[in-house]
Image (cartoon, rainbow, N blue to C red; front, top):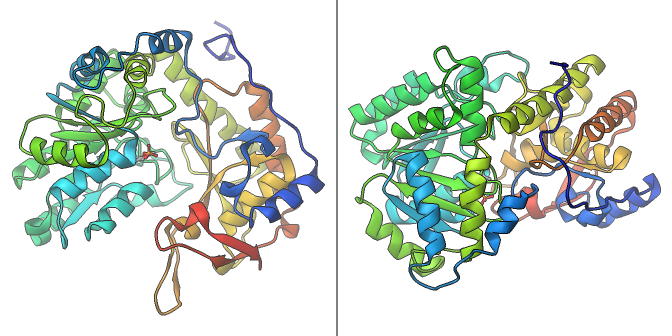
Length: 456
Ligand SMILES: *Cc1c(COP(=O)(O)O)cnc(C)c1O
């Protein structure tokens, strides 16, 4: 076989993208208060802000949309999705929600209380925010390797078992459940090994605690297990997924990731201990139990997408995409989280801007520079996202300054990635001209989405 890995699809419908000039982009970014979240998507050339809900649906998904049953209660589309999810997860109860954070909100407000603590490898930002909003302490217990961007380890998303056992011993009385996120988005899209999932499950069971997985990227995680973990080479992706789910008591998912749809989410629960409380909360905030926050057609598209997302040719190409950009970054000397994760490449801003003080937000500044140089939109995963502005006016900072370039599924081709690598090389070459920022306006939660900045 030739060694070039091609996109395993052909394009049936196209969406033009627009080039802008540098002068335009300077004006547009300043109008957006130096926050790329506030740009109009039309003014972006390569939109790698997120892989969430941004991918291309297949012809089979669009066809399924026409089959949507929009009945208020007991729609056929619910039972179709339920059958697919029962098969993959082995869990009994499907609770559909409009997206991942709604699943989190419904589950946490039904099950957690003020003063609780919930561990995870790394909580995603909405997960952390929804826990903290309920007065719950959200702890990140990823292995030490997972916090070192340049260190190579096959499963940097693994959870530190010693730290978990320590927490269970000391704080078990206030832990309603334990979590793990596959893949570990916040820590670089890094996979969690089957061995680690199994061990976390056993440890939680030993202390009588339920195990909830955040499974936004379960298929990508399964592909990493197939490629990297002894004993899984000859298993199908579906078999690997089934084993992963077999260790959990429940899961939350943003279907906008490996569900291959533009909107959707759900909770699955193995048994009915929390079911009534969860469904009550669902009815209050999302909708009737057989549609949650979704239309019947959304449920249909998701039922097809979950299966397409486990296709091995697709997953091989998907993981190769990030790896390919990583190879180009290596060649130009830009640091990134290694090895590359499933859905994104995380640039290490400290390798491009080693002298910029953290008070000027190096990752945020690199993000701005990528837009100014080539119309690329990424997202800062650093001290704007995870730092905090305290009531006394002081700031806390994040341990890493990363820029995530996240790739929508089945949307961009190899030449887009070649172009991006050239833009990043130009940014690095001109790094001494990159300006830092200061924050002039910010909300209390999730400040990166809406904060306003000025040049520092
Ligand atoms: C996207 C994401 C969520 C939240 O899902 P939304 O659909 O954006 O609300 C939760 N956890 C992880 C790991 C995610 O990647």
